[in-house]
Length: 367
Image 1: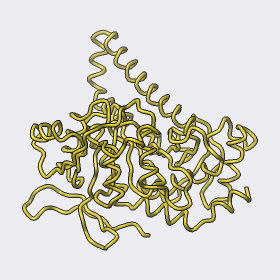
Image 2 (image 1 turned 120 degrees about the vertical axis):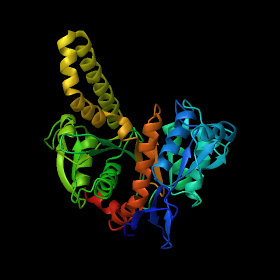
Image 3 (image 1 turned 45 degrees about the vertical axis):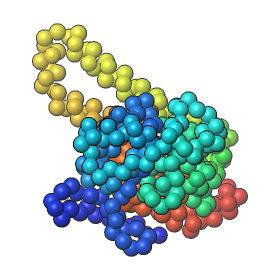
Image 4 (image 1 turned 30 degrees about the vertical axis):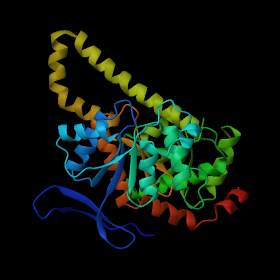
């Protein structure tokens, strides 16, 4: 499948710009995003507010899924218009076991939101709720793309010369080497479609650049990646991620999630150190801070996860965005924007086309 043509059109009445795309039937239609209104630390207040901001920005039609008795007053408070509400009487707890969440998911906001995508009533789903439950329910209800064994969470990191993609960021803590080859293919397809990198460089995160370094999993994964039609640059170290040595950084979900949390903590620490230094530096430091405030704002915006919003769950037959559990309304709006981009750039179709043209099992055996 080729990438769908997409454009933003104004309503005849001069209203909001609405994101549209060409669907499988060749029809130009608005992007529909199912939002799990009850998932996240600040649900439903911040989730509803973020969805309304997204719709006001023209990012498509929002479908809020959750307890309508709690959602309707929030929609009225923020003067949301044309938002559809799908009632769900239950929510998946943030600490729920994924297997338990799957068994009781039919009446939950997360389960119903994913079902909307499965049934063709929404084009993407966004949730800031239990990520393990999100993965488990989506895996069963949407299934993986043919040729993909396991989905992966792809995180976009800010780097020196532009964003890079890291995957897996937590979906598979135990990982087979051949799965990492599939992650590389999905990450390359995403980098081409969303980040507009024509020939993304793919690197395998290890403890050294030399091929002989790393555990058995990393060494075997490198052999798998060598056999694939990718711009594979070999092993990279953790420090290389932020200097664009590779555009797609591949690892297992255990290491990837540790790197993600470490980066979040480091960014927060740096921000705290700068603020503390300014406050304790006296009048001259405050004057200097005023002079560099515009530059500091740019740095903060570049490092703030609110700007990125959410991480795509790649490899499924549907567009899924995992938002941060602490996501506020700005982060939810950004997550919805990421979902709309996935739909408009046909990321699922592009991954399917790329994987379908290869015999991954043969590549794995040759490695």
